[in-house]
Length: 211
Figure (cartoon, rainbow, N blue to C red):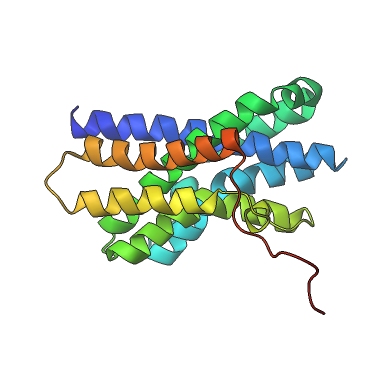
């Protein structure tokens, strides 16, 4: 696939991932009985927050979300649709969760590879990939007054870090970019889906906490 066509494909997939993440964020606002503005804010930060954090940390300013109007329009549209049609959207929680896993896998890879392009070494680049995938959800949960779900045993950040690490390491080889991205994507997606299906969770403290 020509590089320009691959870049266009990544943008389209990126926007799809932002839309799905924004729907998840807006649903949090609706379920907490918050207003339309809250739905737009939580949808926006869920879809764009991770990319904002990554771009600022690696010096890619202004962030991509501010340089392309589509990156603002997509989460706004997702927030509005979720707010208006929330009973229907809420019943689609399983498909949304599945698409969320695809978005996580995509973001961790594209975030990591962008960090590499900006000169980061493999470890910090992999961390930036993870941040791209989980940063928006963390901001959403904090704004909504909840403990971020990734701190409650949900296997979300670890698959993102694994997928980003695979992409970063393979990027140092002579493999085509499509193969590199696909390997990282598959690693993250496969782990995340297995965790969802089998109920895998990160270890939590056993017994009562000491105070």
